[in-house]
Length: 177
Image (cartoon, rainbow, N blue to C red; front, side, top):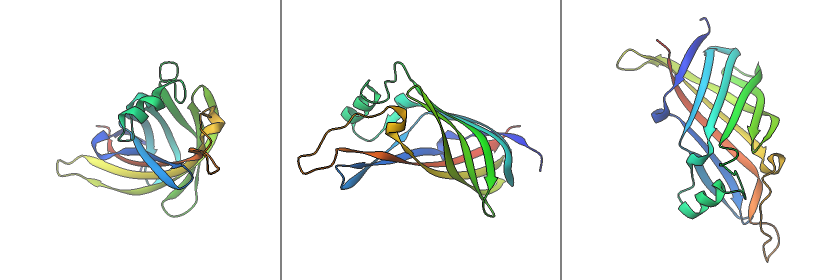
């Protein structure tokens, strides 16, 4: 199949994350507004062109006070840095439907190279005849690598917020007509 453009279906897609809290549990959240430009042959992603833009103000951890704090200058500083941007620079096939997708992540004014494991989940037509493809991905980034260092020491030792962020991406995309 030739490389074609795919449009993200936001109602069937998600970008979620988790981070250690108080060294004993995890806090999970999501970003509700994001977009992607995907030009790919879903059966061979090695030649794909992929870039994501995430609206950081759309963060949702199911706690308004925490979400507002994450939007503030202590964390994302969304007034100055409203988006997280990912642009793929290299894609290698690692298994039948699995790929190592390396790219530039720009967050909080810092750009670093990161690699995510992406899986082609399948392809088919919906009840209205639109061709759809599914992709999932996982990866980890260190928030300190992006200057996100706000934290608090715990009385019992350790820190309030972990440094490692686990990111999970599930995308359903429609083939552009």
